[in-house]
Each structure stands twice: as structure tokens, then as C-alpha cells.
Amino acid sequence: MTSELEGNGVAALLAEAKLAAAFNDPAERVRLRKAAGLSLEQVARAVGVGRQTVANWEAGGMPSSPSRGKYLRLLEGLAQIHPAPTPEQEAHTAAQPQAAPSSPQAPAAESPVARQARAGHARHQNRRRTSSTEQVYAELREKIAAAVDQELSRAGGDADAAAGALVKRAIPDVMGLFARTRAQARYEHTAYPALPDILRKPSKSDPDLIWEARPSWRHPGFRRHPDGEVAVTALDVNAAYLSALKTWLPIGKLTHSVGGEHDRKRAGVHLITPPVWEHADLPSPLGDREEAGPVWVTEPTLRLLLRLAGPKHRLVEAPVIHESWTSNATETFLDSLRQILAAARADALAAGDDVANTYVKAMYSKFVSTLGESSHNRDIARPDWMHLIRSQAFANLWSRAHKAHQAGLGVMCALGTDELHLAGDWRQTWAEGRGLAEMKVKTDRDGNPVLYTVTAVGEGR
Image: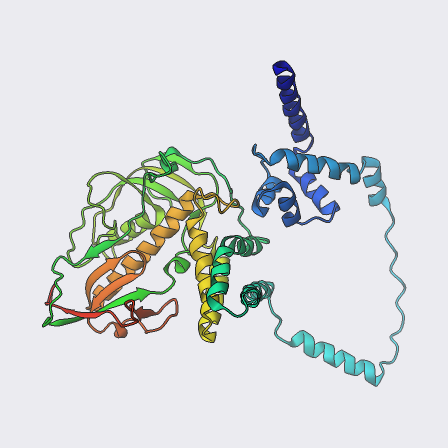
């Protein structure tokens, strides 16, 4: 019995290998799908993978996965329905005579109605046309609005219930938006690249080796005082993770390099010896790390350190790069998704629609958190992207703290992705509001603004 089962297993493997060889040409995979009038989404649902995985299979390699056999069997069935044309058929099609152009005729006199139609056509052609990109953005923003209306209707107008339902569907919905923005994209990405060991967790409860530079900093002279001399305001950065989607992301499989100069056209993670930070009035760009010595950091952290070591700032020595895992990269890979979600967020804020705003926030925050090895997102497993986007949010907060310091404000605290406590008139530096470039005052549980006073600290205070 055992030998019979083993024989069946071998036969199945041989059959799958035979099909893989038969459909080794990516162009043939595309031809079969299009001949059957199937979309990438339809094929993806049929074989149990994400749309992007099917797109990757049609673009080139077809790595082994539990769903590959189903995909190959689908191709086999489509090939029986839509066989490839023979060389004779292709030659016959190419040899078909083209229709000869008809001899020109004198134009007929144009009637008044025809002239009116021609004028209307000219006005239409001269009107500002909506670009294809704008059409996609409008379409996807309408989808977001439709999802909100649908859940509110199902919940009988209960805003809390509708918001809860929208949060639960945020991951598949945002992945649908992402796939749509990538439909005509210039860059392709690998959904499941082989990962270096530094990005693998030793266990489910342990982190990997990447340091994201999360800040948890208070000014060393920070002391609250009821009769303090300096008024401090706790501020919130709006939609920190949404803004952080604009960052340099590696597109393909990460490859290893040793030493050398930083290549700005590539991105990934780097083993560096960081410089010593000697500026007590500002948080360290490395966040709350206390251990000295080499550390694996992300692209945003390295770029921030290199910028601070450059001639414009000269705040630190340049870090020493020992090793890197990088790939060709672009800063705009997620830009279309970011702009769509930013526009939908602005729509929700303008309308005072808290349900829609909660939905949009869940989409961009969960998009980032599920890029790792999450069972909630089968379309992309890129823990390197997750680390890079988070680190970009931390780097953005540091840049705001530095901007405040340069404007003469006292930086009292920098916490997480979005919390900055400043002494002085911060409204001279930022507008107050909920826009992405604005800042808002942090409130406590009762909705009161977080304001307090401290004794004078720092240079010139």
C-alpha cells in the first residue's frame, strides 16, 4: 500500500513537471488567459492566490507553491479550448490582402445640422479632458464612498457598527486598490522574494534583527513645573503612516553586498556602525537605542544619517556601512495608492464623515502592518517594506523635530510616529489642522488639549 501511494505521489509530481514545461513561456500564459476573456482577478480567485501573484507568473518565473498545480491545470484546459495557431494559420492571416482604399469622392455639401454637429464636436474636443490617471483616482474614491454607504445601510445607520465592519474588510479592500493602481505600472515587484536570515524571526514571539529607529525621547532637562517658565504643547502628526508610504522601496529580491558606498538607486537594509549623537536638545536619529556597536538599520534611517553628515548640516560623522541587502528601488512605488487614500481622507474630513475617515485610516495602517508574514494578507509578504515604511514615519517625525529646533522652538518630547511636544509658538512653523502638512493639538481622554509648563531648558531658554 505504501509503495502504491509513493507511486501516485511520483506520478503527480511528474505530471506537474510536464505541465510546467509545456507552459514555460510566459507569453503563452498571457495568450491563453486573454483568449478565454479572463481577468487577472478571475484567475487569481480560481486558483486561490492574489492578483499580483498571477501577474508575476505571467511576467516570468513561476516558483513552486501549493496553488501552482491548479494554475497549470487551468492553463492545460484553456489550451484545449484555445490551441495556439499553427505556422500555416499565422502565415495565411499575414498574407490576407488588405482592403484597398476607396477612390476619393467629392465632399457633399454640408447641411446646417451637420455644421452644428461639427461645431459641437469641436467644442467637446477642446474641452479639458480627464486623464486616465484622474479617472482611476475618481473611480477608486467612488469605491471607497460606496463601501461606506453599503456598510452604513447594512448597519441601519449605526455609525459604530458600520465603522467596525469597514475595519474588518480594510485589508482586502486596500489590496484591491493597490492592485488597481499597479494595473498599468512601470515597475513590477516580487510578492514572495527569498528573504535573508536577518529578516526571519527566530520564533513567532521574537523580532527579527532590523532596528526601525523608533523614538521614545524626552529632553534631558525636561521637568514639568506648575510655575514653569515655558509653555509646552503636545502635538499630533496627521496620518503619519500614510505620509510614510512615500519612501524608497526595493522592488525585487534583495541581494547581498559588503562595504562600499551607498547607492541611492537601491534600497534595503544595512549593517552599520552608527555615529555618536552629541546633541542634547534633539532626539537621536537612531531612536531610543542604547546599545553601542553595529546595528541593522533600514534605508530611511541610513539616508537620514547620511543627510545629517552632509555639508548642509554636519551634525554627525558619516556611518560606516559594513554589509547591505538591497535591490533596485523607486520612491514612487506606492505613490498612487498614497494619493488615493490621501484624497479619500480629505473627502471624509471635509464632509465630517468619521466613518469614512476610520475606514481610510484602517486601510493604510493595516496595509503597512500586514506586509510582513501576516496571514491576513496573501498578496504581498515583504517584511522589508514594512520595516522601511515604519522607519520612514520615524524619520519624518525626527525631521519635524529638527525643523522645530531650527525655528527656535524647544523640543521636549518625540514619541512614536506622531507625537511631538514643543515649547514656544509652534503655529509660526506649521498651520493648525488635520491636513497632511499640518499639525493638531493632542487631546486627552476627555477631549482637552494637552498643555503644560516646564522650567526653562536648552540653549537660550
